[in-house]
Length: 456
Image 1 (cartoon, one colour):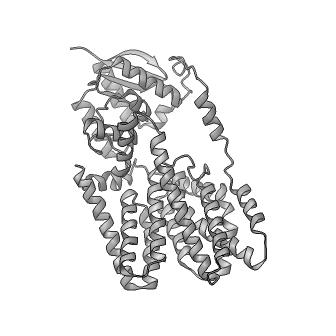
Image 2 (image 1 turned 30 degrees about the horizontal axis):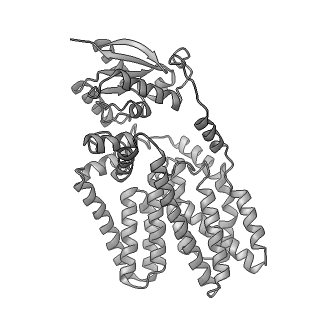
């Protein structure tokens, strides 16, 4: 989705929210637009950038742990360094878990979380007004990358307020300045800030939106993610840290703020848990540091145990290598004869490339349902701003207007049965009527029925 929007922006001059809609910051679309401009269709470049940014966050987490442990142990650098090594091991390994969206390093959470980590460190070591302002500025930029960064920013602000109300005031000024700077860049890019606020925030709530789930579903996801996942490995150490500190210090405030944020949003998507990991890792690291210091436990032995327990238990990298080096042959009719089958990534890539060969550069192509991958590989522009189905009342009306005002040369509709479960009947009925009145069936390719517009 983001590559498609970024490509439309950099290749066709169609700015985000005018050349495709998703609820992300234009900052992320720009990364994908630059990636497409430099290297064409790919996902390695945004991931490399994400890994670099994530690694910067790991480095600053080490510095936070070092600072905390040094203060607790009266400047004992060896103990402080051990705490830092625990922190980067815990954080680095937990970032790779499937539970926390390990491979999804090119998401907004990566950028927002790293900026909040650096902001926290700058506030922690602040000795003058300039430091507080810079800390706030970084947090404000993080909010510009992802609105949920406001919860981590709250923890930074509370820390500043506890220490110095003037520092908190300057930090708040920095936060506002960072948000305004991001807003200014958005406006200069030709994107109205009101569009960013609507599509990036307001449009995510209400019936049919990304957060429209029942309380039963949310409760089920809460327990699955917090108690039926690797996250439970942190809990003994967090409890230990609470028992040792016996107070609600800055790290526990950070943990509490991000925990509240995840539950307010209520999606429990895997990448969202990246925002919890810094506070989780720091409290666990300082607890482990306390064990090595007070109970004379072996640092090396504890570190080996951490590496074994926190190492990601997934075969996904192996399957990824297998897929990379093994040529897969998928006949075009594979997913057409079995309605229960759902097309996979390779089939949708092949369908997109096939569409590119049978259409011209100026042809509009609409892929019904969740067809962003097909749309991307086709290198054709969708007539619909909501090219990957979103089912709010506003988005449905927009889809109808777009298909009426800019009739596509081709429409691809899934033939697999799950399409009916994904997409509202009202939207499906509208598309079915449209193709019945104005289009003719061509063929079925890779699980999608292909319809071409009738000639005048």
